[in-house]
Image (cartoon, rainbow, N blue to C red; front, side, top):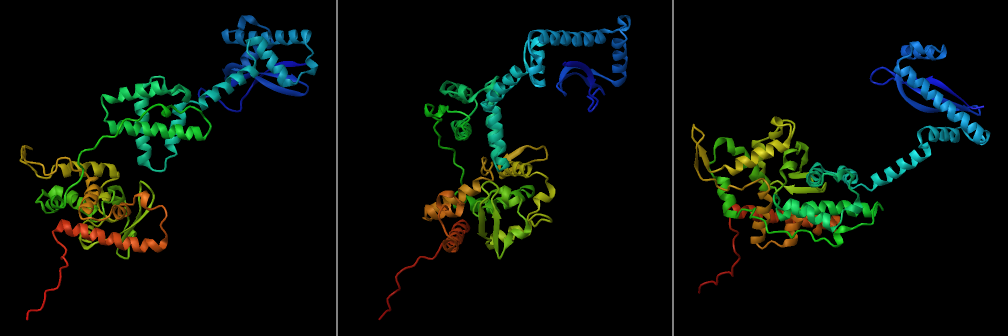
Length: 431
């Protein structure tokens, strides 16, 4: 016949040094366990077991009473099952389930079904899937952009953690857009919705959902952004400006970015000495992981030598552990060029370009190149834009890089005021 006994599982103690007490159901030479919900030290269990075995209620405490009552309840349930059902035909697992159902009103099978339904529901939860998608992005910058959107979603919807894909419809997206409008530009709102749409597209591909709320929802229209580029004359003015000594390094590195076709400052700061190969700066861009090769013009090499680093190619990262901090300092410094400070920190003068940031070097190079009638395809090639790099072969790469080198020289000469000689008709010989 089936039998229920006590068992203190001493394999692993909890944080208080106590072990779980379980009920062992023995049936057909096999046993399964039912958690009692009690945790005891070995000494406590010895005392309780001795009191129950010797049947001395006068020595029992509340926990002893509860444990004894629990065992008695399961014994009664077992006797009832033995009278009403054919226990001999049950497996030990079936018997365990019937006992738990009889005592608690919920079978372990039902509990498993409930957990299964909950797991299915969680699989359809938007936020957990969003987090997994975000963490799968290759670069830290991209993950940070997705994290900004996530923070806005959690700020907007207090119940977002249990928000299913199916619950996000046109009305939810419209409400989220309204929440963003008061503090966020149309372009940033557009970015947030593109992030959400990318997660939905991934979930659709993974058969997590069939819902696509973006079929009916229109993303905020992109607005024309403020000017973020300098003319050739303005770049020359910045290069030659007698800025304060503490600003000189930041101005020089901005010019180095420009001479290297608007290279991203992260890539420049983290570059290593071995990235210079045969007079070219060869690196893999942090944002896209694409390989770049830029000819180092003399103007760029002069700045590299001036700020040569110990471990890195350039010295700033010898002083900073985080390139983001340096970029923040550099942007603030660039925006203060033209201002002079007295001993009382009073500002005098006028900022040369009050909105200037490191990103302007890239826009400025492209804008000046366009003004020199350099083709959009060649500018795109120089910038590393994907739309011109999909089908090129190694035969064309050398040709294209020579063209890019020539374009960069042309842009730099325009900044330096070196106008190319115009080809005219040869003068006729005088008779």
